[in-house]
Image (cartoon, rainbow, N blue to C red; front, side, top):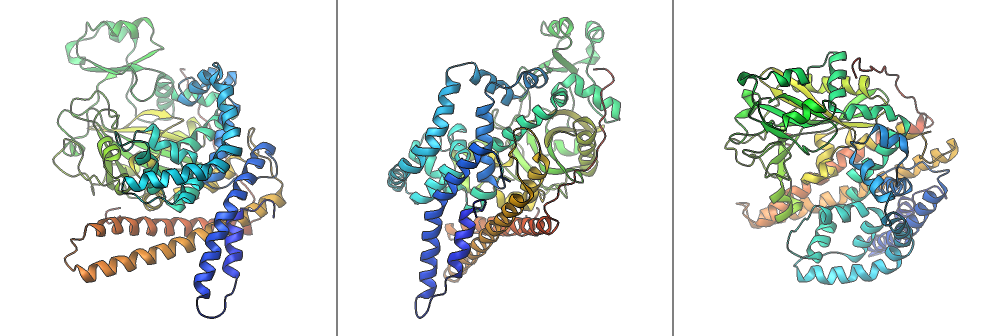
Length: 575
């Protein structure tokens, strides 16, 4: 039907074709491949038509959300006044304001429609063939149709390696081919990205502009105090005027900035920068420099900054749940724990157990093979591996973040919370309405599904959350059921395809081990990584399918949990 995902429907039809005699199986496979190649173009143009109409559409999955996010961001450049006033700390809001006030805004909007309606579909195959040839000279095999489909369905996956400077110094062919190699078919259809988060973040800001106050650090500390959450209390102007040597060192940062912009350590009471906080107390946060917990410090480099946990919660029908979690470990002597910009490292944490898995660093992502990441077990500059270590007071930290989400900003779909583990216990540091996602450290859908069990259900959570909101497509109950059925078919197709790929990986591993019982073949490590990713994809898709079928059986109803809001008074083995 018109509201189906054509890829899933066509694949189902081709699987139903019955061959006869010798070679019928191979014939079916050829027909299925041909069907996917033919229909992903139709699927793309159908999606573009839906973006234009914005009716009778229940967007689901990464391709839908990616194109919808891009259209939403461009349509809102510049953003509305309420967003600028309430959420000026958001990089998304600020960049859209800059974009909308220059000549680049109309040009980008024109390029969006021209690119997705003409350049990518019709000139894309030519560029993809050139990419394939160029990649061969780099020793890499890239299929042209895979590259075209990635460009049409997931332009964010193509742009991310370019923006983040993967394959640094190796040229354009190396960067683009690495993007095609890095992301699997399941990633293309189901992996969440920062780009998609930016789109629904903007809709959240429009729906409830007052939630922007949670990003103001002074307001955030007042809210934490009101609801009884431990936090690092800021110092007021009078306290700063009467500083004593015992009060030092201090840490100061702008109250409405992100990513440690403008942050510094204050070692002297007569530091001239302190006068800024005295003159404009609403623009600066000054607090005592916090120390890392004694237990965790042994896994950090010497003289590290405060190394915090990033726990991202998502608002589900039953309340906040953990969507993503990791620990940031800054480099020796760094001011803050921003890992990829200052020589630090970052490690994923199992959301249920609080056990650290593996991580990555800027060097490993940009200068080595990103398909093997994350692979780091010891933080840069440290001597003891942190992989396999359980974060102390993990359950308490998670509950703090859930409580903060439900009582501070219940109308925000996702919030990234920074939690510091100090000798006094876990402390809330700040909130981020727009925060990074796991793919920046090399995580993909397979590993995310194992580490963060809520990731496979994120698309359903997002659809339920956004339904009926402004800037979101309208959809009748009949059309919604058709879309849910199409999503089920698509997930079933992805699951069958992944199971087949897993069997192929296991077969190749068995053949290598028979020839090389010592396991010294370099290909074995790559295959082991592939097997882990396929296992995770199967886990995630199976969980998603169960919930999609349950939603269809329930008639596609949405029942959002009721929460209360608190206003501020003052203002893998070891996985």
